[in-house]
Image (cartoon, rainbow, N blue to C red; front, side, top):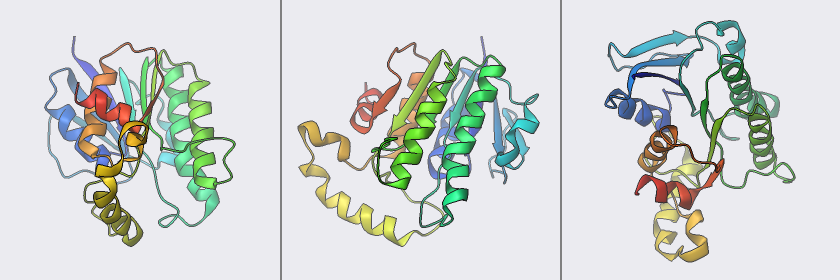
Length: 219
């Protein structure tokens, strides 16, 4: 039976790669995109909803399907206002999970980050930890939270700090072995392949570290 997927964040690096994969995936006959700007890809499978994700609750009737892929996220450099930052990284995923629960969507796959921890003294990590906690509170049957390390690949916008970090990590990556594997820079292709795989599975585990993401993607 063909399925309907929802993607939040399809205009971003990871979300864009995921969209291309789902378009080629015969499992899905429809892909609903909820974002503030449109994608350049044309396909009969795509149904675009150009909205403010801060008002996602106003589009509950359209937010129906079989699986939600939430690829929303920002950075402290890009969003300096902490209130808006939290509105994006915490508010949108949690709101999406609540609507998914109300609309009986049984699979919810969301990107978090390595280091997510509600007890962290770092605002970024604490926000991600709170997001994870409140997404899990919705008790959606198949909830999968991915905690990638620094994500490789080239974004459309230039981020100097990230570019420098990726350069350093590309040198250090071979040194991360054994228990340090989760710190390796991760390819967005691996993240999206893992998302696809998890959406087809019935795994009991809810949270996946970066090295586990790579392992699933390559299994």
